[in-house]
Length: 229
Image 1 (tube, rainbow, N blue to C red):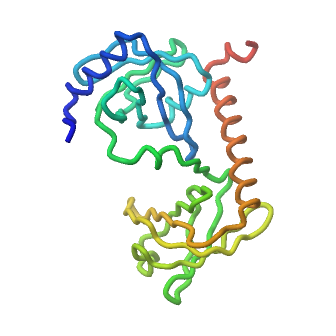
Image 2: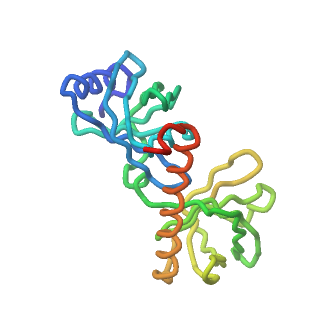
């Protein structure tokens, strides 16, 4: 098993810096995986400073954690975004750790809805309502009030009514995970049947395009000098 202490990670980052190689910095913005090319400006024992020049890097100002990817690192590394200067194109990262989640989970294209969507769930003969957090081609992320989530259990079969702009999809899924977050349960559902691929694909693609446009607009808002460039 690879060591997870920051010093072993900093050695790998120093390797990347010496080779003058760019890394892929993966962050999730509204569920969508966004990959930013970045170089290392400084590597310390428990922190690092990265340099970037992509407009999409504005997402670093709104996310809390990122994943660093390079073939010169022993494994994917997660880090907290401690400070960002979009004007200088720099970000300070700390709390460096080897990633504990599978990279494939982070790369799955999930999109958050633009406007709130309420999803109807039927589980064990009981009906409950959930807020849609994100949707992918494989399943849904939901937020269920804590006092209403008792019918849900890991691996439980759930019937879902998902209202999308074009139509309402009626789906079957299984509970993949549950986590308590404050006064709600964060629930992951995995589709248990073939879904209406075209409807779902169009929704996911449309939201991906909208989210990327939102990133461009956000960059222009916080970096006005780029608007005329």
